[in-house]
Amino acid sequence: MSATPLRIIVISSSVREGRFGPTVANWITSLAKEREDMQVDLMDLAEHPLPH
Image (cartoon, rainbow, N blue to C red; front, top):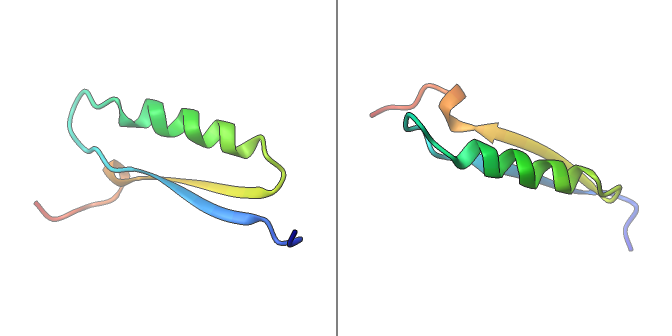
């Protein structure tokens, strides 16, 4: 197996009020971070200005 860790990004794509996506994204991210063979980042699209 490669010594380079697998790098993944979890994207929370819901931007609506009352969204549940961040709960799931944080859960998946926390599980993946427990692994030593992965580097995990979380991106929440609600934190980035998007066109309507």
